[in-house]
Length: 219
Image (cartoon, rainbow, N blue to C red):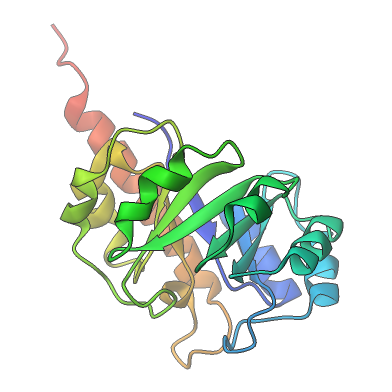
């Protein structure tokens, strides 16, 4: 049983950086070059926020079909990884100098094997049919994924109320979980310190419960 990674996406403020540090998450996602998202922030703003992250939290640039120039800017800004949604040429990926997380929605899983074979792709993010919608999908479809050494992060509508169940259902088929809207304030503006803490508690608590369940009984 390995500890699940936790990624909180859509970070926009200094206060949210503090929440992530307090909760002890693994990845902080910053939406870049995607103005359609209310969580999109300028690259310069992201660079300033990244500098505030503790060394234990890795910064992820979250993008949609980025161009080569945008990727170069992301690399120069100090991000540890880049998460790519949408279409992108293989040649562009091969030129990226930081590790790549390739995001898929559940209707596009046939592309999994293609990207899984690319050295630059260190992990995949599995999202709902409408990425970023906060919608939950049928987790059982992920049981059909081929075995891989790449990191698999589950996204799509995860929140403190359902993340424990997701881990219970999928177990070691996933390496971590990813949320954004699921830990936002009730008014949809900014992240909630309490929800982030509860999300992390539910992830760690489910892991502890599974360890107890599978531990050999004392003789």
